[in-house]
Amino acid sequence: MKIGIMGSGAWGTALAIHFALHQHQVWLWSHRAEHVAQLQQQRCNQRYLPDFQLPDLVVPTATLAMADVVIIATPVAALRSSARQLVAAGLGEVPVLAACKGFEQQTGLLPHQVLAEVLPHNTCIGVLSGPSFAQELAQQQPCAVTLASSDIDWIRDLAARLNNNVLRLYANHDVVGAAVGGAVKNVMAIANGIADGLHYGKNAQVALITRGLAEISRLALALGARQNTLMGLSGMGDLILTCTGALSRNRKVGLLLAEGKSLPQALAELGHVAEGVYTVEEVCRQAERLGVDMPIAMLLRQLFHGNINVHSLAETLMEREPTLE
Image 1: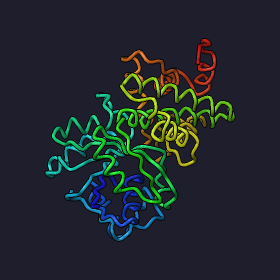
Image 2: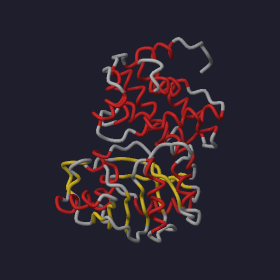
Image 3: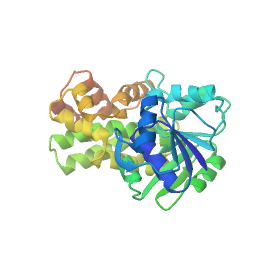
Image 4: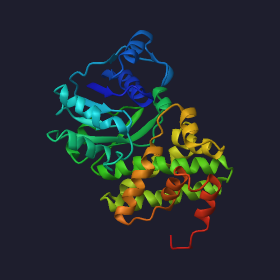
């Protein structure tokens, strides 16, 4: 297949490397001409994914070109503008996957909903979600993720064509469940990073993961998801990895906050986008709109607004009124 990847950060680059190693032609698009030039000259993404060479089948480019499928691997904040660029290039009806996780700020839309709004005539829209670190995929370590779309025939065919012995792809028609799981797990990973940074121990870690899954499930079901999806790769699987993995950006933010750093300091030290930071507000708005109880997310919002500190976040959670599980 010919695969277009919009976004030359760590995840977009890892996907490009992976698919090229499995004999797919890949164009890796960046809107920054200087970054494209660096990728072309050095054949390595020095800023976002150093130490990995781009295979010959990866073509870095600043010009959008025809492909069998386009994967948008930008942050959620750039998803709408990326889709508009597809339209401007005459590629608005090319099958497209969102490989970013979160709710769009202000609109509260999930990635596939943003794409559907910008690409109203495109019948093949989906999301790529699940437990996956860019470095491990670039190293060709085994990974399994979900491809979800309301068009189950298309997504099954795409999964079959892209599946291989490194990246196992599971097709799913519950695109809402896959998208919500991918978005909210980043929020829970920040809370877990704080707990880890404060040395609360494994009991606390497992409690936060479990209750985090409960919060994700409540919101996702209220938005129309299926429970089975939330127990799968794009729900529980992605949550566990992001909350426990040393490569997790969102967990790292929590660790830095636990050290006493401010949120801007933590993000500056991270040097990458941590989607959970920008997802907290929209998750809380959705929860309030739908009447969904999400105490971990709500307390993180208070933390980001400066109303509580990292120590009182955990204490407040533990002091809540007892309830049924």
